[in-house]
Amino acid sequence: MSNETLDLPKIYDEAQDFMPLLGTDYIELYVSNSKQAAHFYKTAFGFQDLAYAGLETGITDRESYVLQQDKIRLVLTSPLRSGTDIGLHIDKHGDGVKVVALWVPDATKAYDEAIKRGAKHYMEPTSEEDSDGKIIKSGIYTYGETVHIFIERSAYNGVFLPGYKKYDSAYKPTSTGLKYVDHMVGNVELGEMMTWCNFYKDVLGFAQIVSFDDKDISTDYTALMSKVMSNGNGRIKFPINEPADGKKKSQIEEYLDFYEGPGVQHIAVATDDIIKTVRELTARGIEFLRVPDVYYEMVLDRVGEIDEDIAPLRELGILVDRDDEGYLLQIFTKPIEPRPTLFFEIIQRKGATSFGKGNFKALFEAIEREQELRGTL
Image 1: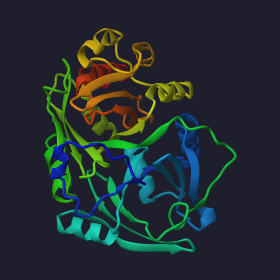
Image 2: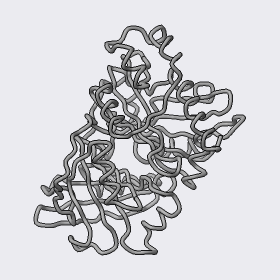
Image 3: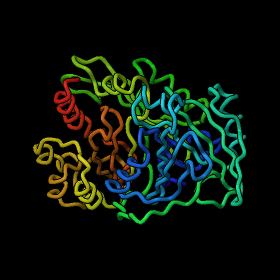
């Protein structure tokens, strides 16, 4: 399930694609009620039914719904009994991302290379098959309890994976225009950012393409530091955040407190028409962070000429930033779970390969206003 490939700056050449990694295969969230979560992601975000696994397919300990929108696949998994690893994960972390699955040509080689380079074992190479062929998967741990599963599916023609059947309900809300996973952000503890950046460099062959420190990402009250790691083809990008010293509790500390450890903070998904997508998501009940209107009085002076009219961007709260390659438009949802943890970013790239550095201050002040309402600032 390939992501898009951008025209990449030379810095990407530093990545070593020795596995190689072809793209994001799927993202699996452990959730307390997979049936209701599937309804939410279909209704609010425009995903469509793809596959199902559970009692009807011979699986007795869990139930999973697989949803798809263009190149994005979500797997929503809940336990069917008490005392399971899935249930214990949900009890500790709340609903959140457990698996970031990576599409590879050879899952055995990917596992062997990762373990040789110091990765922590999660799953040895395992072959699974049914009448549609076979897949091979293996896995390693990354930060916290999050794992990477390597998926080799060249010999498989089924709907998703062995053990799943095609699922097609009568409820088919339309797409909201989401295309592919642009990047996924991980939050780690103070002092651990470089540990995990080095993990992606040494174990998976990534290169660091962007770095932000507390001078770039700070307000009067809070700060954080971030580095962006990418594989060589630019399809898989993982920014890693850690908190920095500030007068009050940063969004990263809030996340770590409520998730009770490191984990995936947000999933950035791309669209070709952010105005249309955000209008549709808003109409379906998704709530977004808002920056003050004064942001739009100065934004064009900062970023220069853009194709879009400023009025709908102001109306919807969409942010704009520019780099040497072009510009981007982005907006962030409020947390989509009861705990202030996981959220989504909607992004449209008009040539830009960066991550919206010019928007950080306004965005983080908006996040702080939400933290203040929650009493966690």
